[in-house]
Length: 193
Image (cartoon, rainbow, N blue to C red):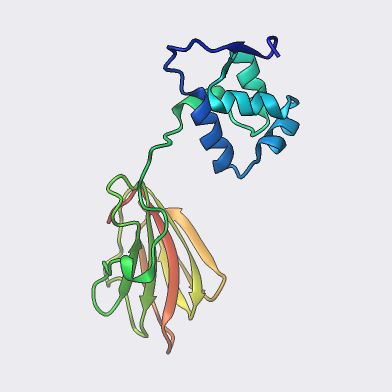
């Protein structure tokens, strides 16, 4: 066992054990499965997680290869992030302009790097007569109905399962030319809402 791990100093502030356990659980692995994948004993994983032993850099890398996860990712991973993960429909504010309804996912997260939006265009709903432009990228998939999408000089009528993806610097427009609601799930990066 000494070749795999070194005895941990009682005064060490090393958080490798709790961090390994949190990362292992995040990846849905049991101690036994991680040990099998890494080619070490189950006891080794258990002792590291309990903080009873501290692995050498080489041994820790071998264990992390079983996840797989690099050393830098292991130590830089923010484990105390308490940002909300799951959202019910009533927790997504409507950020649309009548008659278009747009529910924003994750609005409470002020560090969002993208906007994910559930949009309903009623018949005749239109993003506006003027073509839009903004930085970044955007993409979306039609869930129900039909949506006419204009990007630069290109125009397409998209239906359920169809999608688009383009640089938002290109002038664009969205409008429902059908006779029923069009439902769209889209993402815009960087977050503009």
